[in-house]
Length: 424
Image (cartoon, rainbow, N blue to C red; front, side, top):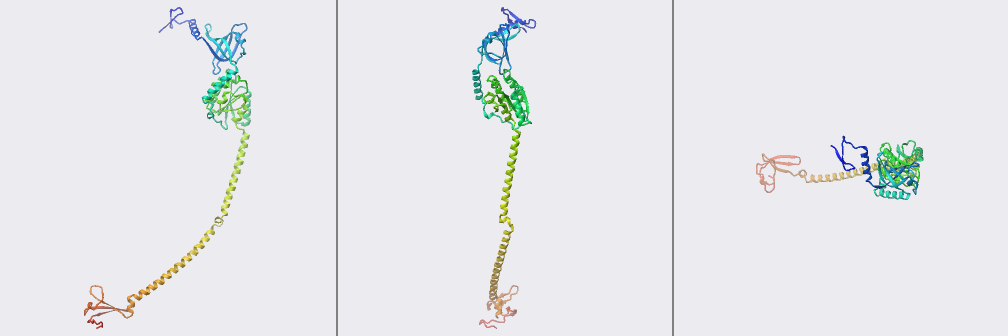
């Protein structure tokens, strides 16, 4: 399948493997498309200035301060020489120009006609606006701050190569805790490439499971020198870290935005080393103090408990435990004797009562009556028990009788009756 495109003269031009476009046609079309973009304002940081004597064109490289992207720029050398603010490599500028495609070399550049240097006041205003934005998003919230480990085995350090900040951190940390180890990443700490290098080093150390805390250290400098540490990309990278980050940028008055996003802000690199690792001598002294306090507390506790035991042992019940038993034994013996006497007295009294009752029963019983000369006459009825004879009418003549006297009984028979009461 082939495509048909109009030519510059209006005649269609086919494009296929059999009818390819020449390079000049492609370059011309790209140039035409880019030319339609018009003029634009661009902000960035100058990383290279090349002005050749006797030429009418100055060549510059404009780089994005947050990412590793750059753009070729051309302008009149007069724009550089006549600028109210001297333009040097590292200057932040705003340029006005138009993109151009050079068909001869196939390159794109920005042809600028106006260059404005971004002053300190404008930079500070932008930092303040970014500060308000990040604060509104909650990146400065103290509740998000992660605590530092008490004794990290490995510390990540991001700093300039052979810098005073690196020497301070390493020397102070080594003196405080000689066993501490460092994972050092040397990066640019100012200039157009600083932000990208610091973000890359931060991501590398954060992904290392052995690194327990990351220190971002740099010595003092001007506002322009510390601009990378107020970059939005770096601030968001610090907030996204899972490893605690300590910011030690500049001196005490310096206050870049990364100080607010980091978990801990250190006034100086030396202060960062003191915050990250404990002082071995101080910790040993603290341990010795705790041991002494613990031993004293234990001794006081033992002495207090010994006094309590002595007080308990001095009480009568523990000083002579058998005394109470002996007193109770004597009391029990007295009570037993008293109980025995009461029982004997009760038994004796009841025995006397029984004797009296026996005597009375004996006196009232039939045996005593028989002993006085009386007898009991019973009628003997064959086939049944003898019956006491109560009337002469119950004993007709011939009735067999049993007469009981004091010393036994006799058998008699009725010979007759005498109702006068005299015996027959």
